[in-house]
Image 1 (tube, one colour):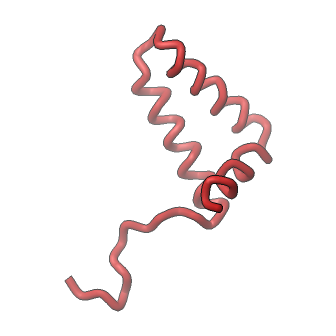
Image 2: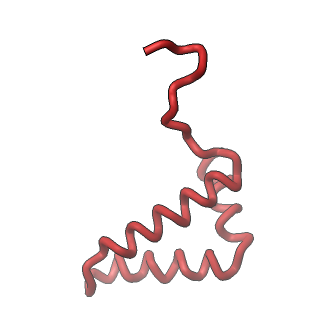
Length: 66
């Protein structure tokens, strides 16, 4: 369900989807250093996860004491 929600959140914005697909082509082609493309892919996916309400929080739950 998570993957589907993120996919929809990306694809419903044509410019964001096109940019993601272009970045994936850059990484898959192997012609360039992929670090910047990968970072941008992560940012796009993170924004889509937040938009879809599926972002995983790394903060401790308020009921958990460390």
